[in-house]
Length: 282
Ligand code: SAM
Image 1 (tube, rainbow, N blue to C red):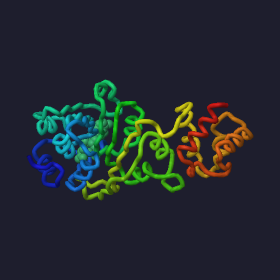
Image 2 (image 1 turned 90 degrees about the vertical axis):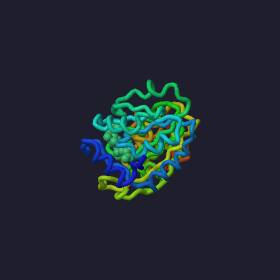
Image 3 (image 1 turned 135 degrees about the horizontal axis):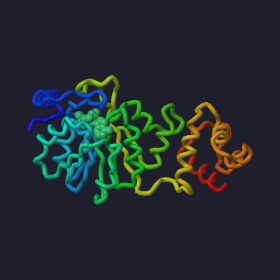
Image 4 (image 1 turned 135 degrees about the vertical axis):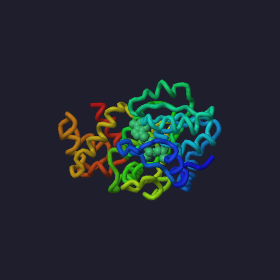
């Protein structure tokens, strides 16, 4: 079978079917077999793995995933891609295809019997963050998430405290997973070429969270508050976002060993956890 993740393979598929690319669905298909190898190697797929693929497109990644994994569950929103995918992969016993919007689908229903799942995908960029946060918050047994995203988003996701890219998305994801950039991917690795650069990132999910929380919701509220006014000190952002007087916040910061004039962007999730736990006690 011809490799789909090449310019020739993609052109052949596109010529064979009456399919029109849709910009609104972020359709940029991977045509670079080196990048494909990097994704597959990072995912470290074995014959016992269940894979969730979001947005299979014409199957560039799917083709390789099916060779390596125990099963591949692919979710594609565009109904005009379904006959193509069925035609290419319908004969694989380890392939299931769901025609739905990943953000509306009840993943619990589909994945409830699985004991461990890896997500491997070249994501539609217009909904990268909601997809990743939904997966992380789902409580489903995801062990890793290896996804292609826009380069700027990748930089923000892997950013460490005190760097320019560090923000609420970096801190929120750091609660669930260790993150790294697997590969930077140029525009010419896709057909059609996107206007932005891309990167493959790996999120290795923690079995147990790296911090202990009294109130998880409060922890995420503290993170959100800390980055809501980036130029303000942590003392002022907490005072503006929580119904606690300034002198009590000063006490909390003192107990947390955090200077009152630092900005949220310098704080780690350990700092946010201590702050949230002290606020929870009030
Ligand atoms: N996996 C293919 C590849 O690597 O060439 C296609 C990747 S393309 C960047 C994104 C894919 O996600 C498209 O096939 C698009 O139709 C699909 N998609 C867009 N929005 C979606 C959604 N809400 N739910 C499921 N799939 C979606």
